[in-house]
Amino acid sequence: SWSYFGAHNGMFRQIPATHREQCGSYDHRRRPWFVAASSGPKDLVLVLDISGSMNDYGRLNLMKEAAITVIETLSVADKVAVVTFSDDATVLNDEFVLVRATKENKDRLIAAINKINVNGATNFHAAYTKTFDLLEETFKKESTTGCNVAVLFMTDGQLTTGPGPDQVIELVNSKAEEFQTDFRRKMTIFSFSVGQDADEVVSKSIACSTDGIWVPIEENKGSETDIATAMAAYYNLYALGLGEGGNEDFVAWVEPYLFFNRKKMGTTVSVPVYDRSVSPHLFLGVAAVDVYMDALEQIIGEDAASSPMLERFVELSTARCPKIELSERELDALRFLGGGERATCGVSNSTGYAGIVPEKCPFESDWPSQLWANTEKENKSYLERACCPREGSNEVNDSTEVCTIEDVNEDFAAGIYADNNNGDQDTETPNTNSSSAKSSTMIYVIVGASV
Image (tube, one colour):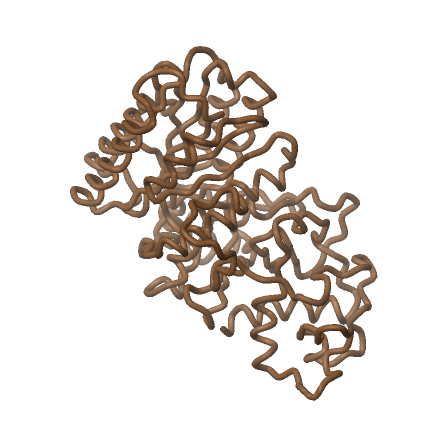
């Protein structure tokens, strides 16, 4: 079976390696095994603006792609619903409750999203009212994960009818408090401004006033990598909670599926990887292993596609709910991580958010210059491969200071990351024939698991 590590910024390593003719076509951040391990079980509602202004600048197609990306990443441990709105709001689910994110239900919702047409004005108050009614009905009928609630609100930001921003903010805050008091459920609003020239003021104001997160999805970028990075805001928040307390040994299982390269049914078992030397723990990425279903079928005596087998995966993937306890500054750090300085709410003037926003190795590139023949680290010691070089030199040990194992852990937490602007380089499944590439892969997995 295959083992692999996917970093939060899109870097991917697979053992054994598989050569691909086209580099960059696979983004693990769009896969259920990554999101399930990084966010845990959740109730998720997508709220989609289908007003007439979404026809401008290709915003509708961009929103559809972003929404479908989110749905595709959900696992059977999650519950999901889709709400569309213009003058009024409508629920796309067959029933007025959230449904389990099985392949069948996800395919049904994706088909409904692809059929969306736009028309009418933009009524935020109607959209949030319908969303909260849906959530309340779901809680009452116990058709829920029992964990955190994520509302992903996608719009071009142009509120044109209904109550204004102040009334919308009041509604969101009152319902968040009500859900916490009556149902002990933590709700977070993730607001996305979609497309070129989208109005940012109202959407960002709602996020900042309700302890939420706002992120722009810009059409002038619009690649799959850009969308995956933007949509990562919600699982990055929950990843912080999964790194704490009783979830330290959390393991996620995804619904059995047909392996693309091997044409056999299997599942993926994945775990989040953290640097636990800092607080809050720094989310590095996800380590995973593929498992063929025929072996499990023989052991358990059940068909891979059976309902009892599916329920087993749901039970295995249901951790204690991530408990989110962030300071205002830490929350602003997550905003910065998702959308840069423009996405923050002015809580802090500093961008040095320790433990949340990772730093790069300061004096060298994070990426090998020869991806397919990576011999740059060949014949070098472990410390020389793992440590950042000293300032003004390409050598690790050129000064009186010596790079130690403690430095390795510190430099690893700082050095494996590229920032969002540099994180789109093609680093997928490199040929690991050289010893240096193999050892680099093992550094990620071993060091990540040890801290």
